[in-house]
Length: 146
Image (cartoon, rainbow, N blue to C red; front, side, top):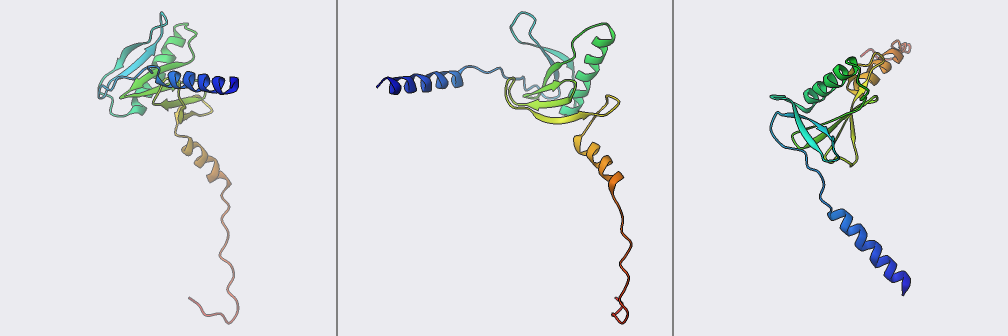
């Protein structure tokens, strides 16, 4: 009986946690936001307007991060949002997520010199170096030429 009560209590707690209000990113078309928590409460600050895609917003956030570092700041990770999605810029690259604490989709990786690039493009450059082309196999004597 006690274990049944514990299971019911656990399921109820998990259910209440799932119903907790999650932070929603603004969905203003073309507006790139920086997300900050100066006093524990989340604030959305406009970084740029008229951004055509989420990658452009990520570039504006990276630009902001680099400028702060050049001014002597110590913030190496920046969080932003664009049209309902959150953007995370850190030392690995750029990730996107629908929620602030949820799973992240890795979108842009850092190259060796610190620039951002699509991960597939980096791998493609590596693969092109390893491609070995074979000569056409010799024809068998008497085989039809085609």
